[in-house]
Image (cartoon, rainbow, N blue to C red; front, top):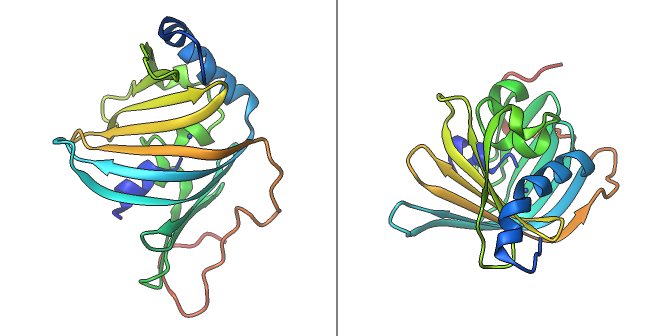
Length: 211
């Protein structure tokens, strides 16, 4: 997985009776999520699709979020990997390569969709928001960055009821990364060390660790 794709992943995500209602309330669901959900936990399945609709990558694992600014992705398949943001730094641990990459979090997440779920700001401050029609019972809303130099084109979110169900990110090459969330828990309590990361002994650490 490339560093850019890992960021897209970051960092990182409602059932209505009629499609017209879904179109009317997508932005409301998003604002409700940002306002009310401070912690979030889910199993995720990730699929990367190219411009021709071909599947390039598939992965799955566990996602945990504590706003503002803390999250972790624990990949189980196809190979183990951890991405941990502790509020100041972001750590990328490739278990098979025995390598850890660390970067200042603000720098690493600049102009990426990761701040959408982990940030404190109202989405309308940073994105153009468009409610989308739906025929699948989900409430869809699309966000495109106001910054013309952003490294992605749009992020589309789907809500099932009030719960975040899917997140689709379209990059500047029109490649799509779809995240599907299941076993969702909103506002769970986490252990104190959930968003802490200490490089295992013997692994290479690339980057500058802040003290």
